Length: 413
Image 1 (tube, rainbow, N blue to C red):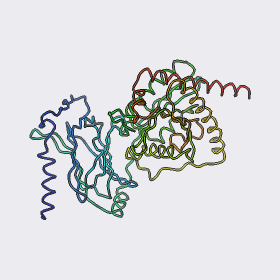
Image 2: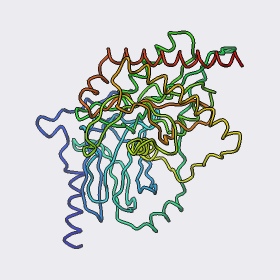
Image 3: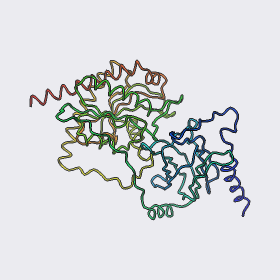
Image 4: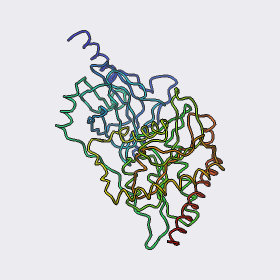
């Protein structure tokens, strides 16, 4: 064995057998041991190796079953496991090592968690296993990666076959017999393994928008004029296409996707709410960049995107899209008018871009960016109960105006 290989072997062995656990380091909080009814806990992650061989180790409160597979375009390694409680430091996974560019983790459906590794280059899964707790050391998930090339990487995927994506059971349709009230679908962005944007102080977009959406749902329901359902009501990942089908399958009358924005450092600063409608040609470069980022949700969650079916745009669907686009724009304009009385708006508050979640051809759809988590004033508003209450009220008023106008027009026709 070469000196280099011996060094790697020593490093890998130390990471699994002799790596200091959280309990061994003074001043490091130790997660409580779960009861039999609790989900297993992941308490620490370590990386070792180089661009030829890389190992990832996750400390666990108990042994679990793991299924590992690879996906291409981009190169990823995905590990599915039972639902895990991840008690890891903030920003864990943002910096990689060797073959691992970065990784993320979280709930991908009720009862199931996932770790997704972004690869710096093609690599094969040499080993993926979980060892029992022993000698005062926790159980550990170990993944060994070895450098490969694209041809071998793609051959492995072809031989193994694409893993079947499990989808969460759809919630029961809330439509009561004979209930003809319009159905509003509220779509809290991101969720589960997909955190969305994150403030410097740690607040996550997926949590901010879920809390706001739950308040908005309650306020719309309280009017008694509409039925309301949500694409998610907890910290669960929902694929972009599933969000669209959720609304279409229930014959929704309106789809409202709720998000919070963030700017990269080189983009400077911006603040205020923005309302987006669908357009294949973005209204500006900033809108195009945002849509591209939001449309990466499925790749972030480790979904196989290579076999997605394209929409077949026939004449009838084109006609439906034109009418839907008109209604979407009408609602967006009305919403901007209401929001300006309750919240700070972006200097260009009405924009358009090719957001996947807005592509239902028969459901008027808009996406609201409530503000920028990278702006201190906006973040203060986003976590303010008073601001949320006032802003949600303005959206309810816009919904009411939209349907009052539509129903009046329908009666005249």
